[in-house]
Every structure is written in structure tokens, then in C-alpha cells.
Length: 386
Ligand SMILES: Nc1ncnc2c1ncn2[C@@H]1O[C@H](COP(=O)(O)OP(=O)(O)O)[C@@H](O)[C@H]1O
Ligand SMILES: [Mg+2]
Image (cartoon, rainbow, N blue to C red; front, side):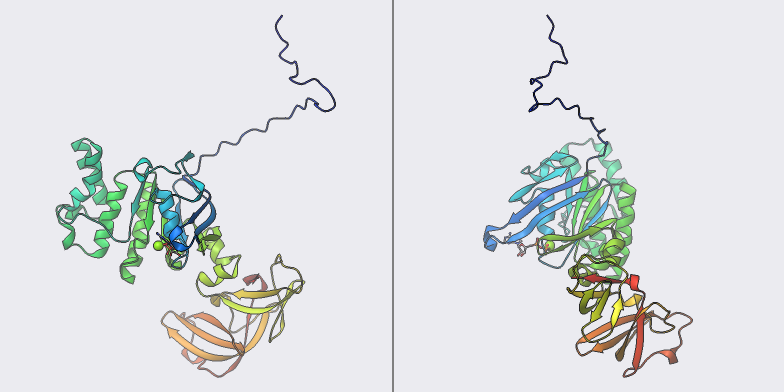
């Protein structure tokens, strides 16, 4: 006799009821290009201190993702774990859904561009770029076509026969980029690749690098300690502090809605004014009680910092409903398109206010210092941070 397929495995006793659970449809999501599954790294040489601590991150395919944070916060260590140059002490690394933890770099479809270009000085640019393809045994005609395409992409096609010694820093960095991209990695890791360039060239390379990334569609994981660089280039970024990710989001999320005091002060200039929170208002230590636009997740009576960006503060024509404070102008710093005022609200509490010097601003309206002034901001433009 055929067994009845509906026969329960367990007798239907009250302890073993046959529960028919509806099976939820599994959403088909592409695996992230990079998944960091609670990775940690402790160096024995560092006394067992954490260089990276329980980092969880998903980086999507084709994303320009930045790791941003001050020197020593663990960016390079995290990047090296993705590349396979360093093994995590705990946790795992997945590339395109595959667990690659413990695999050496050459078994991962990942390439790295370092700050030092590490070019072969005795080879032409074309041969530098072709190097990896030759080692892989790619056919000569294909190598020629791919190298040419890549050098054109980084705007160095006309210099293909030159040696690296004759190039500028920006050009060398572009060769290094071409050499990494020509292998068509799934993910390109870049460790402060623009740090050695002067400011003007750096700005130009930021734009170029972003354009190249869009063109090739490869996932970029970009390490930088420069907030402006991370804000202008990234689709998303992770702000790191002491081995941890403090906040992860789009540039706008991180800049406009920082969730911690660290992120608020690290991402550009933020005015942090200490006070005490109570039911939708913050009473400044030496000043008025101000309405805040956001319900913070802190209990009444908490010590907090009120964070307001310099460009969100009004100097004149204040509107009803604004938070208002008075202070003394302590300094006026003219810097071309903008003027920054440092305004002291109380001893030791100074806020900076940024004003655009537009066609409508008049020189004689600028404060010179010493004046008592009233400034204000809209409640929704300040954040309460603990
Ligand atoms: N090989 C190593 N041995 C011991 N400590 C290290 C090593 N590499 C990095 N560290 C430590 O780990 C921390 C993070 O370093 P790193 O990842 O280089 O930071 P970042 O790239 O953000 O400047 C630092 O405190 C650094 O001193
Ligand atoms: Mg580093």
C-alpha cells in the first residue's frame, strides 16, 4: 500500500498540531556586491584592540560607496578585508552572495587602487595596463583592444607609449585606475586614491572618477577622510569612528540628518549648542528655550546638543515661528563667495553662520564685529543629538 502523502510525520496530538503555515513568497533580490557580516578585526600587535568592530554593511551592485572617517578609524583595514589582504578575526565577507572569507586576493573578483600608484616605471603606459591581462593569458588582439579602450576612457590614449616617469600625479593615478579596471573586476577598491593630488587637480579627478564609474558600472568602494569628497562622489557612504560605522546613508541623509554628535561635527561645520531637552523644546544652558522640529528619542531632562548648520541660520528678516537667539559678533571672515560670522551666544558657546555673497548682498550690510545681533533658524533645521 502506498503511504498516504498527507500522513503527518507526527501523530496529531495536542503537542504536535499540524500547522499549515502559508509560505510567504520569497522576494527575488539581487545579492549585494559586497556584504560585510559583522566583521571585526583585532591586531595582536595593537594589544588586541579593535581596528574594526562588528561592521554590518551591504553595498549594492554598481554603487559608488564611500568609507569616510578620520585617520585611524579602520577604513583601510575594512577595505583590506574586502580585498582579502587581511582576514577578519570575526564575521564574514560575501561578494555577490558568495562567502569569500579566508580566500586570498587573487581568488576574489576584486581589484585595488592604492594612493601610491605602484606603476612599473620601465614599462609604457599601455604595457602597464596590459600587464594583468597578459598574465591571465588573454589573446593579444583582445588585450590591444581593451587596453586602448581603457586608456581612452581615462583620457590617456594619446600617451600610450610614454613611460610613467614623464607623467603628472593625476595622470599616473589615471593609469593605475585603467590598470585596475581593465580586468573588469566586480568590485574596485580605492584607498584614498586622490590624497596625494593638489586641491584643484583633486576636484577635477573627483568628477572624472565619478563619470568613469558611471560609464563602466562597476561597484566602487572608495576610502577617504575628506567629507567634501565623500559627499560629492558617493551614492551612499558609511561614516566610521573608532572601528564602527556611525551612520550609513545617502550624502543628504548623513549631512542633513546626522544621527550622532560625531557625524554632525565630522560632516562639515555643525554648530553644537548644549542644552536640556524637555517635551519638544531645548533650553540652552545660557539662553532661551527653543522649539525643535523633531521628536528626539531621548527622555525629558536629557542633556543634549542642538545642532544647526551654519548655512541654515538666518541673520536678518527673521520670520515668525523661528527659533531666535541673540549674541555678539566676534569675527567676520570674508572668503569670496561667502562670509562667515562667528557669533558668541554665551561665554564658550560660539556659532558660525554662513552667508552667501550674492548680487543682492551689500558690502555695507556686513557686520564688522562687536555688534549685538539676533539670529534665528527654522525649528525643522535643527537636530537634537545626545
Ligand atoms: N598591521 C597592523 N598592526 C597593528 N595595528 C594596526 C595595523 N594596521 C592598522 N592598525 C591599527 O588599526 C587601526 C585602524 O587603522 P586603519 O585601518 O589603517 O585606519 P584608517 O585607514 O582609517 O586610517 C589604527 O588604530 C591602526 O593603528
Ligand atoms: Mg587608511
